[in-house]
Length: 118
Image 1 (cartoon, one colour):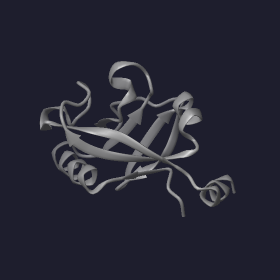
Image 2 (tube, rainbow, N blue to C red):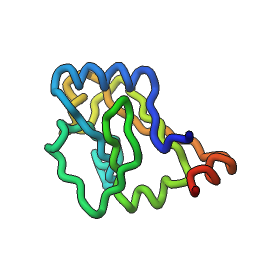
Image 3 (tube, rainbow, N blue to C red):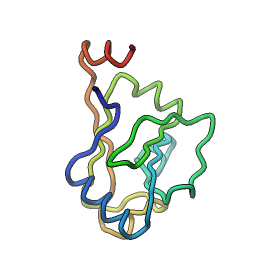
């Protein structure tokens, strides 16, 4: 099965650390200006998702939401969440860790796209 969102080993390691420290967490990527264009990690239930958000999938059991506008832009690609050195969004849990989550992407193949449309 093709996943719409996946993560690198570095992102999974950072995510596990955050889960140990903060309990259950979730991701949201809004596509807005400033921090909104980065995947943001929040304690579960501390960020309210609504009708303008799409559940894209999950990473290691962590739900990953994206705004509908962003989804329309990215629906032909697989999002690959990575973790790199640097300052993350000021409201995202990884901020104090000296790392930040980063979205990479790749375009789905024609076969993958057909599978997703079923």
